[in-house]
Each structure stands twice: as C-alpha cells, then as structure tokens.
Image 1 (cartoon, rainbow, N blue to C red):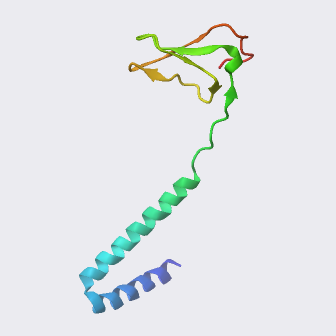
Image 2: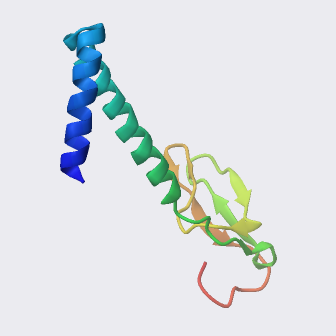
Image 3: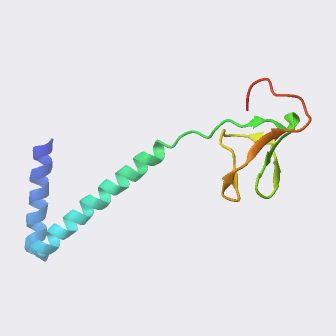
Length: 106
C-alpha cells in the first residue's frame, strides 16, 4: 500500500515537475498533503467532542451563588456542572435559602 502511494506520488511529482517546474511541484504537493492532514485531523476531532452534560432541575432547592466581594446573587434554576461561576475574579459561594434540601449533594 505504501509503495503504491510512493510510486503514485513520484509519478505525480515528475509529471507536474516537467509541466510547471520542480520547485512549484514540490511546494504544491507539500501544501496539498499539509492541508489534507489538517482537514482529516479537524474532522476526526469534531467527531470526538464530549457529550453535553445532563441538566438537573434544582429550582425547588433554593440554591444561590453569592459573590463574596460585591454581594451579587445568582439564583440556580438548572445545574449542569460542579464548578462555581466566577465574579470579581473569585469563585462564588453556593448557599441554600429556604426550599427543601436536595437528596444528593449538588
């Protein structure tokens, strides 16, 4: 398989070299191979994207994120990740005000 590809590449370079010049043929073939490899890796990585996280409805638990620097409060309706949001360059603190407690830690 590799020998066939090498023979085909050499024949193509010879044909293009005599037609357009060997420098242009080598540069064109190198650019073609580089763009082809970049395209293959791009589409392969798109197929390996992680799935979307599952959303959990936590509106009845009375959860809020509070910024310790300025006091901004964010009410949590739907939770999708474990990390707290950042505000004033620091992570916000999760507190529970009213509501019923969750059955498992959020």
